[in-house]
Length: 235
Image 1 (cartoon, one colour):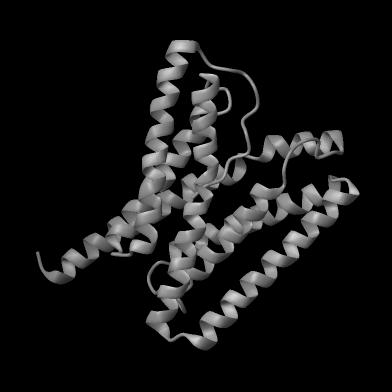
Image 2: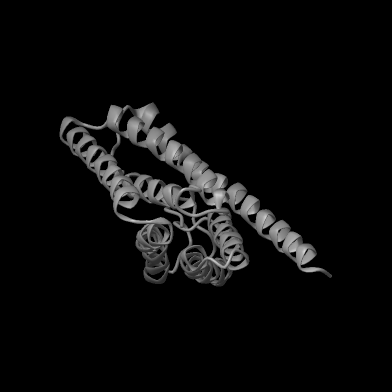
């Protein structure tokens, strides 16, 4: 097979992996909907925290910027998935603000403004102080740091499973979607020779496998719980 043919095959595989990652990520973006239905029905944020959505919004913005052609050519599927994710997180944050008490409302508005300002600074600095390759490295390291910090959520859930010996806070389909999304983008990053995509999603894949193994072990030994899932973040 010619080099052109091999390039076409690799491009096809990488695009398929990226599209699959977008689909599985979409399932994760929809996962908080039951929580927000409850918030809207009760007209209160109750004891729910808005911080996961703030963190996720910032993460999506940084990864969206990394996937833009002006920063990283040929990884546009990273930009598409994170643009959708940013829209979802922004909507969730607005709903949270509308139904929060005054103190939490002001706190969430302040955090939203701070995140937006921080992202604006990142865009300004990367465009004005870095050339193409250095710009990709700068934003790439920021995206890796952001993604790895998001793994705090799965780690907290895994720790909770160990403590309670129950999978009631770790729904199977949510864990499966997290694993499949991380695996898809790990493959996408490998095929694109992009460690800023493959490394964090490789870590996410390992955490996803761990969650699934724990699910099968504890559900078979102790049975499944019936409570609503905790708010989950994604890589």
